[in-house]
Image 1: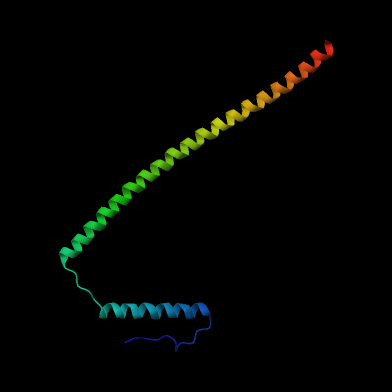
Image 2: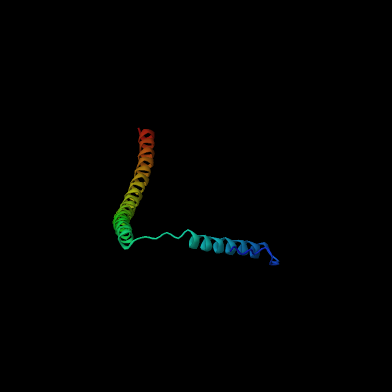
Length: 111
């Protein structure tokens, strides 16, 4: 038996789509009852064990990736600090170059 919600009078489209979703869910539940599949305990246990091993594998991979993220974050901070130091050195060298140019001009004038 399939129930239809189209007889209801809804005032908004959201309510209509909720009714459609409920109708589809009701039909899916009804179809599941008709197409019910029986699994043995051993089949379920094997499926569970496969799923569990896959979960452990994915969890281990996740932990590894998290550790990589932490390591890369630390490396980024180190590189940012190095970059800042290099920028400071460049600024110092630029100032030194300007002073050197000024001194050369003065020496030229004095000669």
